[in-house]
Image 1 (spheres, rainbow, N blue to C red):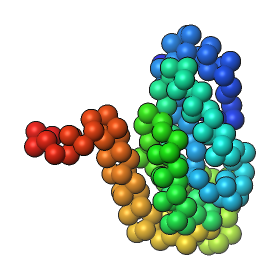
Image 2 (image 1 turned 90 degrees about the horizontal axis):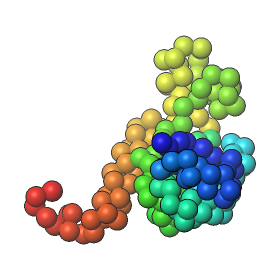
Image 3 (image 1 turned 135 degrees about the vertical axis):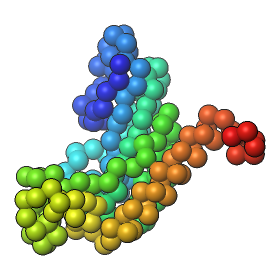
Image 4 (image 1 turned 30 degrees about the horizontal axis):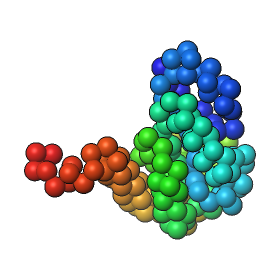
Amino acid sequence: WGCTTRVSSVDEELLRNMKEVGCIFITYGMETADEAVLNEINKGITIEMVRKIIAITKNIGIKTVLTYMIGLPKDNKEAQDRSFEICKEINPDVIGDGVVCIPYPDTPIYNKGRELGIIKDDSWKSVYDGIGIIDNSFTKKEVNAIWKKHRMDARIWRYKKEYGNAFFVNPNF
């Protein structure tokens, strides 16, 4: 079995207990490598906490997946590129494809979208219109392009990690 959790919700003792009862993977959400954005969204974690928990989890023998978000408030292209580079440095078993920030109703991001006039009403269509573009400089087109690029980059990173460069020069792949 596996789960998704926050780095601030586990410690070494809990991880050892999870391993003992059969946990084989954990997905952690880093969200961003930009500490200012982490503070803006009140994530309550630091990149150092992410590094530490990923290392402990791997050391115990549980596979790790690390994800980050695209289009958070105050996000920018440089923070996105840095997030992907930090994910590679932290070296989880898998880097997630990147998750686009969805302004779910009754959340601070949703409320900001309403305040800015991006989310015009309570319909899901209006919520969809705000995905990835609330309180940052991105357009929908830019969010989509970043997501596609990081999705491919994450897959290439994983294949290189698992198969080396032979994956890319072997015509059978």
